[in-house]
Amino acid sequence: MTVGATGEVVAARFLERRGATIVDRNVQVGRDEIDLVIQWSAADIAVEVKTGIGADSRPWENFDDVKRARSRRAALILGIRRIDLVAVELTPSDAIVRWLHDVG
Image (cartoon, rainbow, N blue to C red; front, side):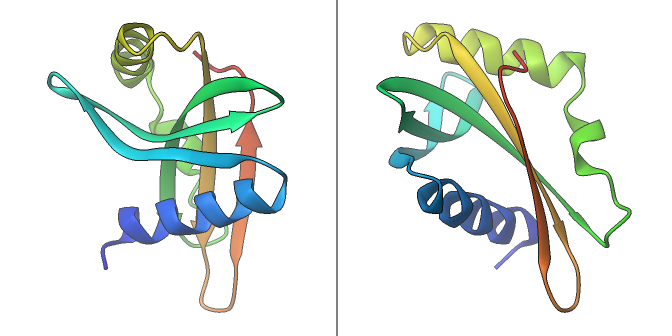
């Protein structure tokens, strides 16, 4: 399993433990992709997952303006207005997860 795929599994489990329902994974919209679509508090949310290796990897910094625009475009085509970011930092013994709301 790739680092990115591992991060998506960790993110999905993290979100489910907080009450989210995973609606879909790796949704292709033209040339763009939404990593996860969740339902949380009666709203559909597009979730971009960024994963890094190490506690200081700062994967959220890889969600740049280009990726934000592509995510926004794909989400709007799907009729989703909110985009969240889940940043996963994989360490040898754990995963540090940050859920950033409404980043799109």
